[in-house]
Image (cartoon, rainbow, N blue to C red):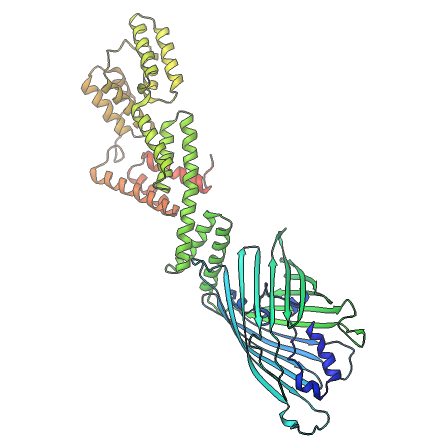
Length: 591
């Protein structure tokens, strides 16, 4: 690594080198040093200033750090060391600023880099959302200490300085991988004291992978850097024991290996790395350089209010649920964030998209229930399922076709089937002949074709009564009224069923079925038996408001509306069914 040239420079610096020595690299952050020495694809906090300013675009905390490295212990008399002070200041929403000061010191050379950087992130609603960009501006300075006077050289002016620019980008194509690229000293500033000494351009690129492994967090790093004519490859791995806040690290490059660990608590981070040569290069006079110890301490502060922290957490969890296509969870997180910041564009778009997808999921589930109910001959339940599916996903052709089909089937009933009409006609003929058993057998065959048809249930009940006599020939209108009455009774609307039976008696005063049903189902007293026009209008309005709230993802408001319906109309079957369905869907009621 270029850093190892420090020792050679400190030991063999002469006047010719004064005129042409390149600006030296400084120590890298301890975490990245333990991961191979290159963090271009996984910059975190203040390490973004060293490797990729685009990492500042994802910061949400104010951070400061300090590190010190005693280089190459055992080389006496040279005092080689590096130090760094860095700070990161997040900007709303998600952008960040960073500042750092690096210093390299030796007996004959002092070098400094003062840097300011900016990182930019993009809103979730834009196609640039997976991308982060960064820029940096640095002032470089170096100063030499002359041990002996040199002719023509002013001892007080053996120094130089220049500005340098850098840039970087991060791209997250998937939640588990990040790609990074950055350039440092892009303008190759001149730091020559007595001539030209261009700082070489440094290019870095790499990838970081985060495969899910157990409950701990594994990070893999693979990268390269190009410095002038030198190409180096780095690799490393980090394993986080999240329950303890401890991380173990290992890595290396072409000629050095590294080991390290990190410890994090609320507000404090400590990172350590030990770097060592695993071959004879780099070396001084054929002797490999000794290992280096690097210690870094960092502090973090929350710069946002508690409301902002909660909002950012909800937004992050909403994005994670969206990526995992857990639409119900995603909508819940975005909904809570919406309550905090109802005008935030990212929240509005995330909430709308997750609700749309969540409603599609719910609608498809109801549609499949309707298909199963229709296969079992339960057209009434199938119709309700299709209605709910269509309310959640309006315009879906399959749902509309199912609803139209079941509505037609319920309105026409079994009498639309020629086989049923034939069986009923034969049953009447057998009854006229006094052959009740054979007549009942035909009724059973008809019911086998339509087990849940209300009219066939009515006919079977009428034929099975001991006191039943052969009914007069009924017209289609009477049959339809009987069917409607049974439907109303099955839904719990006895008030409407009684009105229908009374209508049957007005047309046929001797109708035994209507008389018996009215006798068995006497009218109740109280406000629930009959609703005024204003009450009926209020019930209809609350039912529609509940459905609108449910389709909008607000199940709690829907339940309140339907429970308010029951205060006016305690036997309202629609409200009862809706409440039961939502409670079952939310898991608060099991059947």
